[in-house]
Image 1: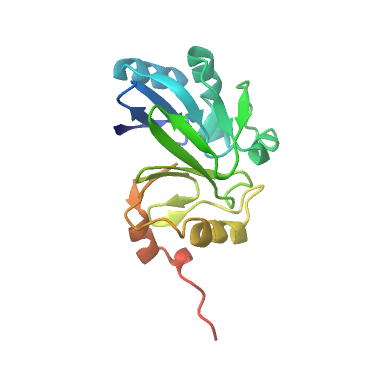
Image 2: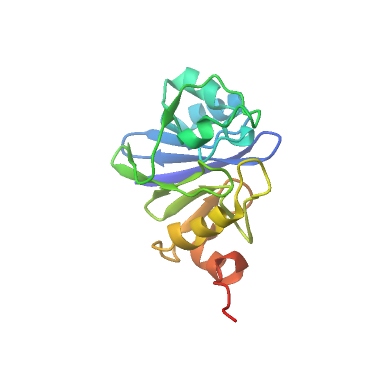
Length: 202
């Protein structure tokens, strides 16, 4: 059984998610963007030992606490190589040891399977993590909005393609747990988020 926990961390108020696998009392920490000691204390209070540290992309506000958590837990820190090679240009300094991930890769967390979906647009190596009916979308998709593309490495065309094509097989019932702001569902965003709507032909 899976349970999701949430904390706002860092200056940019990033959503740090903890995905708990209750049978084995282990977890994955997703986007530890700051407040490293706060996150570690939180995990201790939950009685959880991180098995994975998952980054949706390589921006500072999503990985700032990764090194501290890795040093404490010895857990691998996963980041797409396209963002790992660029993160220094974005001032995303970290001494964490990053393990590369690839589109379609399946990560094991106890009995749960987490699928990596490469969803570029906000950054070249942005990924989303799908497990059961949860999609950890990073800065790809927000409630009533989408991630910025007017940043170094951002690309509007890729963002639209990720939203319209890479997420197309997923049902409306999928819960979107974004990098910032409140949770939503894929169905809600398909209805009210114009970027999902196909361009009308003349």
